[in-house]
Length: 579
Ligand code: DON
Image (cartoon, rainbow, N blue to C red; front, side):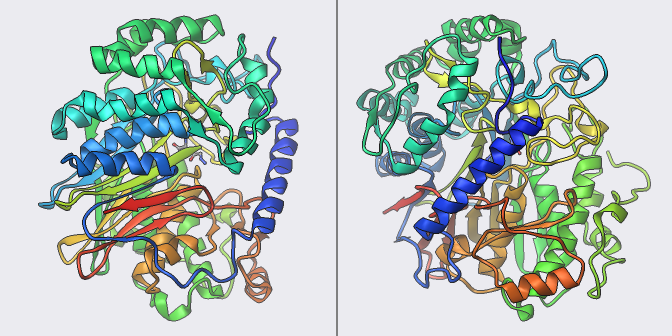
């Protein structure tokens, strides 16, 4: 019998647990001095030709190794992604999904959606009890939380269109890494030990992580190596129709979930048209629905564009106020309009237009905060035909890739397909289980994001590429649920408006606001009391205790001389590798 209390469930117990986890993170972050009042003055790694920035040094090195062998950025993406599945099981995955935005060396742009989808047996009220209340934990922990995984389909879709080296050469480094094992960092050991109780709670078998871990220990992944070997030998169908598909369906059903072989066989990754818009002289290319990322970033940047942002000063009262007001309006729209475009009509062109943003900001006043209770979604007349990891890659030809991929919560739903060697996602929690009730990121949804069979749940993932003067300028993205959007906006503005290096832009303390809850979350220790007080006087609620880290941005900036600068977020063990 499973009892549900986990970070991410909606019960009070879970909230207390989550708070305690956050507080312990705050303590360790402050002790380790990771969030600084002043960012480093230095730049990040500078490379002449090619770069990978991701959550694990092993995976960045593997991506670079592929490019040194002659592979392009897309080959490197496949190898890096698979290497993250081994070295970063917290979020790297084959049991989850993600999004990719690309810009080729000759300026062509595109976006790939390999988001999970609801199983065919899913239904609107599947997470509600007989009284219509949310059943705590059902959408976050265990087999009912799992969406049909998209990652393997996504990687093969990329390979088919852009791959240049033989696929077996792209997957082999991950196989070798899984056999050789990964040496744990302090952060990884701490996480495994923290989540052990949840692994025990949901899995009917002992999983390989089920022991006390220490920094420096090595974990080997023999079952995952075998799964990769089968995928190497049998291709995409191995995961969706072969032995691995049998394994997943049987495993999920044994744990009382509803994913079937047919769900897997019917899964498809989809090419989407990215969201493209201009901010001053920059052209931003970002992820389209079923992610809300690109639309929200467009709404926020369009709303602030008419203002002399740089003149306010970085992280000043005026800057934070302006961005917060733009963010709350964008998130109110997210909640109402956005969902899976294959199921819902989304007025994308209007939402991303500067004229709409100006209308939305018409009631903004410097004199006082606009309470979120008075901010509703915008009016649109007539509809037009709406724990995660990010990595950024640029190759020597100038092809650029931004990928954000996730299991949703840390280690997904905590179910580990023991025979296959991988975790399964809990992406179903990204649907709106009940209108008006927040999910684990405090996001409130509406009809557009209701559960339907085979529908994709709305995401905040925001893999983004920026062009300036017709040339590649920045590749950027972040994990962090709803804070992904605001982290990407700030990393971009830190460089574009405030002239920081990419590394400084990533290091800088961040804040976050999302309509509901009606507050501004700030990384502790990063914002002066004077700024906090002046915002409070204007009517803003400031929360510096619940968001010890906001986002974990991994980015690449193309410098005026054509070299690349990496920004690897020190909030994690992230690393830029280049040549
Ligand atoms: O797609 C989304 O928006 C979420 N599933 C992302 C989850 C996430 O970023 C968790 N990481 N901190």
